[in-house]
Image 1 (cartoon, rainbow, N blue to C red):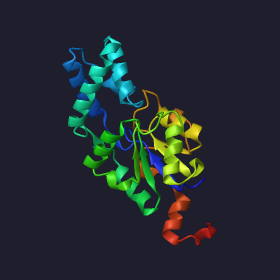
Image 2: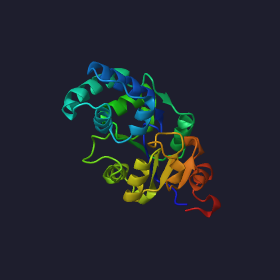
Image 3: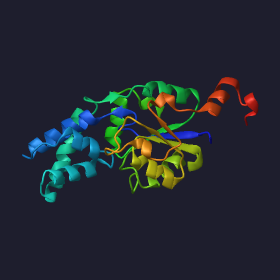
Image 4: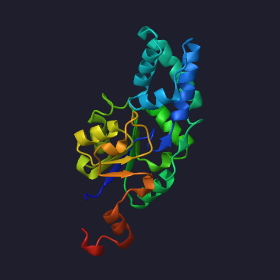
Length: 232
């Protein structure tokens, strides 16, 4: 198994369960527009491709005129800034997993389709911002995941080639982007994958907690030094 020299982590559904935030924000947005609410199940199956996609898909789902997007988007941003993190929780095993990665000395970046400013603020509010060298949102590059461009650019920022940079995510979007970019991918089983079983998506590992990812050679090097076990 190729050992990572750096890692890229998704945010929503991988580090933090933010579904409650989306439910609250979309509920307020739709109420302000005089539109009917959408179900929690609909939101869970829709998130992951960026906030603009979420708002457009929600408007279409309730039968609203697409021309409402600009007003809806402004309301969404306003409410998200107020709610951000209030109904969200760090997944079990995430802090322990990040501590392990920090102990291994591996540089870390967050790459999310959520806009960068609320992503950074969410990490700050949850006390996770100090783990990451970079945080890139969906507005950082010309295209979003599942396009490989954001991963390629994030690898450049981390100073490592894609082949040495693992992507950790919760959805087919993350896996498709990683495969296209040439990054090994690890998928967590607890996030949002549009209602599909993530175990059906090819990955280096599927794990139930972030602290269950195996880095055997890297951990031996950290514990015993570079000469241990004949490792380079």
